[in-house]
Length: 355
Ligand code: PMP
Image 1 (cartoon, rainbow, N blue to C red):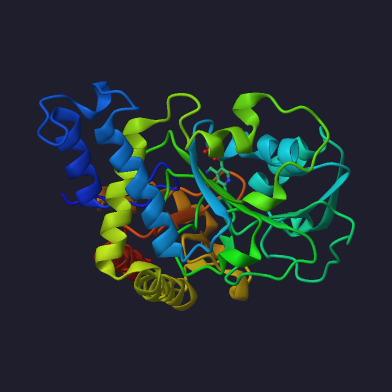
Image 2 (cartoon, rainbow, N blue to C red):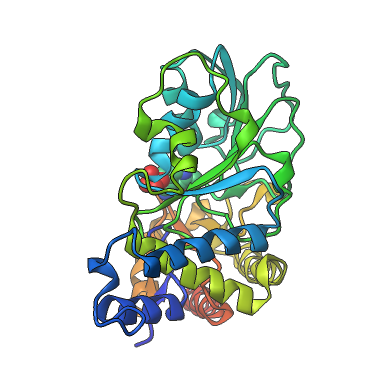
């Protein structure tokens, strides 16, 4: 039976990413050694990281003055690295979900961290729009896609102070105006690579403004100076990320994938809205194109375990919703083909017919 991977992360990756990485694990570039056992400082690996950086710049149209880093520690380490490097007195945070809240919590260790707005009272089912960012904040932090709650900011917002974004679960899903951001970060394990590498896109001139000493491993400037090789970078995930970036370029880049993503999400949300058994908890205008959350209508609530079982038997993997939302979550990242989305829709329709 064909399986469709709807996991929220680590998640589906392009087939070619796995094939090329498997090949390189056995024999990298025909050198008779594995990518896993060569020096990160070897010429062969330098070519890999250089091309990955170049493709980041090309695919996201990153302007001059920004550096791209590949680090360890996950997006969660960025929750503390961002304030360590940028927060002198005050920072502003938009609280749109579990991850945004975790980022805010870390910032509080470094200074005043203001929550400008929160949708917590509505179980994070929407993205607050009416808020004021204090003009004296060192930066404003947003989470562009809320992986758990299935909400997404679909545009690049204007901010009166340097804008910092956690794009763990929507990077490379649409074109970006990078010039609006001071720093963008994310774990790679959704749209890029296996877990283990974290990307950071940082505008160099926002750095060096805090008075606290910064440990070397947490200092963006040290990583920039060393081309992400201050210590041993996660070599295999970076190699895999490069394969995904090549795949995306071949497909036509972020403009092309955005069209596909909008189409996939529209099909699934249309079915959620049409099907009498299901409903979507996220506010319509904020619905995520990456993580589609849906629950059963109140009168059918008790059918949730039955539908899960039905869907799993039909090859739908990873659709159980996060415990904070319940129900189901279909993560339809870049690598999810439209056939996978259609298979899930068929499953929802067949289940409805039985009820
Ligand atoms: N931010 C967002 C939006 C996420 O979805 C996740 C992981 N699911 C994280 C941060 C945490 O990432 P990591 O596990 O790489 O620390």
